[in-house]
Length: 138
Image 1 (tube, helix red, strand yellow):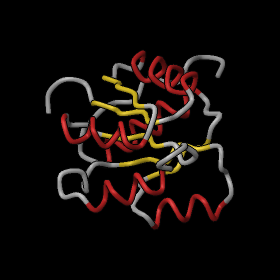
Image 2 (cartoon, helix red, strand yellow):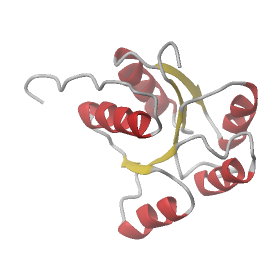
Image 3 (cartoon, rainbow, N blue to C red):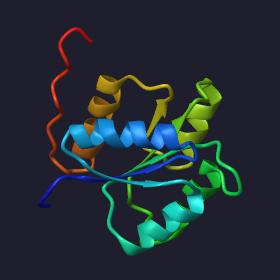
Image 4 (cartoon, one colour):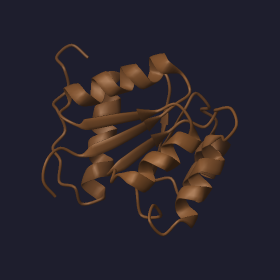
């Protein structure tokens, strides 16, 4: 693959989308954002993404429903998805992994943690990215 990895951040909260976009863009990744599961599905049908960070608590179509639709569609079934949520209970994490998520990142997120975990997912998916080193003092 050539060029930076493409990440889609799906979250109904604009401040979370923007913070994740800034952090991941600064780490050299190509980041798009979607405010809803429905918009994420539209973007994923039109363009290739290497990873989706998917919020759970969204109006209309939550992250669980979005994940199930992604997994049921041959065009998007193989796209790695990391759940991206304030829900931090073990049962939520296990549910996400059982439904096909590759990871579960809890918000609020630490900048270094988000970057390293995203790069690990990309590495596992065969993208071959190198994580940005931890910022000193973090």
